[in-house]
Image (cartoon, rainbow, N blue to C red):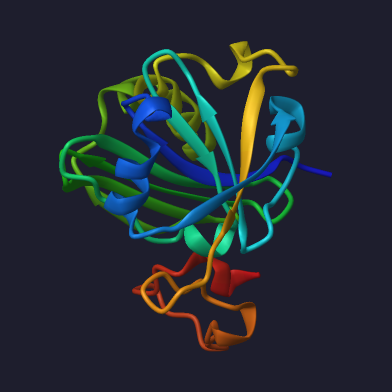
Length: 190
């Protein structure tokens, strides 16, 4: 069994401004519980759940992979939207700087389906897409994923459905059987 996680990382700690972050993303969240980092990072999230970890300099949100195929763009932050699926050998990331998409890669079974933007500095020494993601995650978060203690506090939230903030149900996701090289929706490869 491989490692399977997806999420969003920002270069700002939003612990004291969480409402501002929700407004920026167009989300309405309700706190459900406190869990540990090990539990938060174990595997895929359900579509209506997100787990939020605050580092000293950043925020890491574990999300359903269905939410991570496209970039989350915040004009005041650098963001990394990512998916790592070692089980399916699917690796996807979108890196934005202050509201501008700078780099995007989608790799499926060692084949790059999408490769856009200027190479990141870390790509000079790293060719493996999953390692690029891990390294860029560290750059944006301000600490290595692997240095976070398993018992660190993480807050679990549930998406609240309102007319303004509607969560997409799995049945609403349209899956196209025909795959083209222009297709950026990595979840269609499952």
